[in-house]
Image (tube, rainbow, N blue to C red):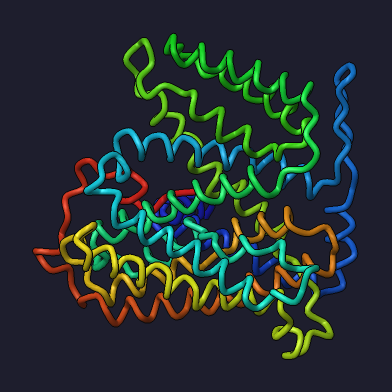
Length: 411
């Protein structure tokens, strides 16, 4: 019996949709618990203070902040590795490859933000959440896409991944520029010193991962204390990892693949479980029409479709970009809906934008409602647009594509 369960679990984890399914289950479980007699225990546990001190350094944060500032730094480290690889050798390594996803991603960030601002223009207490609907949850989106099986051309997965990577670059930039508090220059200097040492390690192409890990942790502590959001330490540290180490090993790729399962099956589900819980008792349809949740939901649902399809169409018609083989406009439209699944990154930005628990709950309502509708709409639109069987001319070779585009396993 145990052997059969173990085999079934291994088979499940190998499925392309596994990471997205685990995330969905974690979020659904959080919603159930938050609206059950266990709600007080759930919220109380997340509010529990954990103290870590080392000499003069002390970090005293609630568990929810350890998850959002600590565990998510590992998630952002993985994003940094993906971004560096995509720029150097992947889908963003040339203008021909990058032009279409770049145009689509810019539209997919700008139009949702504009829709949110338009709806919340007269709501100064919520206007700072403008970046929330600009985000895309790549794990969730690729998980839904993978449910459609081998009918999905590899080029579609690669395009969605490239759009999401550019979206992540945009989100990182937004966090750095607009969601940074008062800066402590001495702590920031300590982080810069750790980054400089990481740069030296990268230039020397040191093959051991231990010094990279230790310096990244030190850098994270300094950045956390500096006022700059600590997850940015993960991104910048990842940029220092060499593609190929001195011993000839593909260091960046090995680190990336080693982290994927931990991020997809542990870190992101924990984040989803900790942040998706919202009390729905007393929630009425009128609450969904409040500017904050409405701006998020419509920004995701309407903004992503207009932005991604519209900007991609203009880029193609202007001769700046071209559609991949086997990918027509109906499929681009379906992908735009999957890109409207904001979830992880939208909730993350929402926690940076607001401190009022009532506003954070409104963010959760907007993100969950918009993402849920987008997931179902995108799935059924693509199901109708894709052929019943894989056509020979739609089978795209996977040479040169990132592993995540082929397998669907991504953070």
